[in-house]
Length: 177
Image (cartoon, rainbow, N blue to C red; front, top):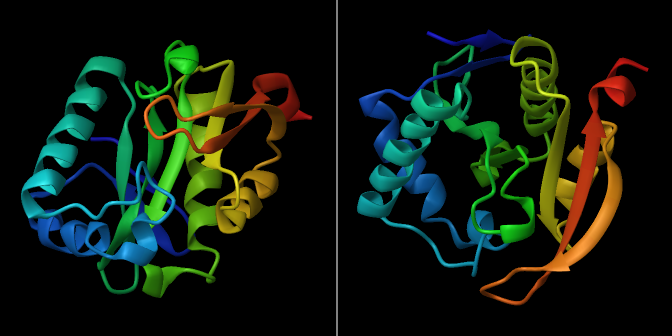
């Protein structure tokens, strides 16, 4: 079982009891504002998401980690690696992404989890390159992306919703520098 420990977090595969807290996170309009069309997701949709994320682990050897606080065991969201199927021009890429409950914002958890995930991608999984896709205006995500050392690569539009997206990237040589 793949697990990563950071000073404050445990990144791990999904458990059955993660469904309700992740559904609560997905039901928060503030959290979902920058995701897809901004719509919240219910319990059933979250269950489908988790099932899909676990299938990606089985198919690709990477996926989205459940992120829990080491001190309390509380699920605070996810971070991980995924193939961005929603963006045709990036389907051959691997993207790093994250989503945390709003009560956990501003404490460095997203950066801590994302940094551990990036190291996992480039050193453990042997990927040569990782991208990150964010919606223009999502300053909090842009801040995490900068902390990862990712460089802006291009802007594009979401193929379904039309909003502007920014694609950042880092390769193994840039990461090691």
